[in-house]
Length: 283
Image 1 (spheres, rainbow, N blue to C red):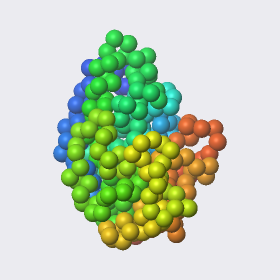
Image 2: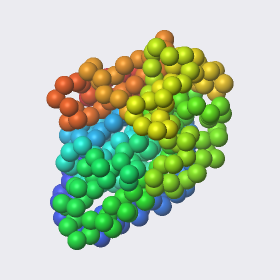
Image 3: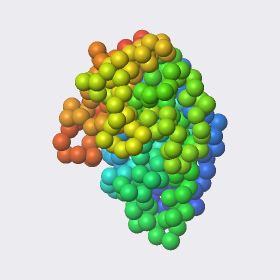
Image 4: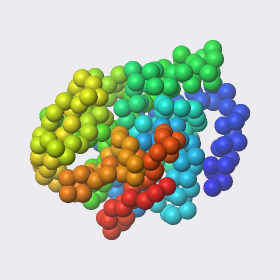
């Protein structure tokens, strides 16, 4: 773990120009990635919402290297709801720049300036950067706007922050969705990042998270996975007491990876083995 430790020491002495350099490096990588990332065969560690939990991120990075995972996939929501948000994003950007093909960062609903101006990221930047905070807010959200929207593994496991969107039949059309949307306005993009499963409905129903967000039921879910030959869906976006919950005959797995988000509840990660087996583990 010398990489982590050495970068921790470097980060303590960062000035705004250093953060901007890190953002520039990652933006150059993200600009070459598609909205739907394909992950080749390998052992994959899947991470749900982090929400500024630097301690848990350290454990995840340690697990990734010590247990010889091939890929590390983060499902979004890196910022908001507390301190250490800049540090979390900086570590993620550092490792993305260092291992661009092995570290995969997709977008969550909090990687949006409309949301992270309200829930804490803007305020943390103002405290940390003083004079330059508005420029840093703009630059971070510029990078967030280039994050991919979902990932698909070699064995047809679809990974996304939110869930199944109404109006999307072919997952390959995710690559045709608009890119570089700082504020998420496209209805399909918004649903990919905001939608939630619901066990007591069949298709789609409005979600109390706000306009344009939906709950999706078992029938909508089964239509989607059947049309796209998907085996499982792994998503995040919701906190559960045990850190995870399964829906729809265990074909949808929802994970949450932040311990600092709440005193109540566990944090977990998903593991996709080379054999294709999917597991949920505490972190």
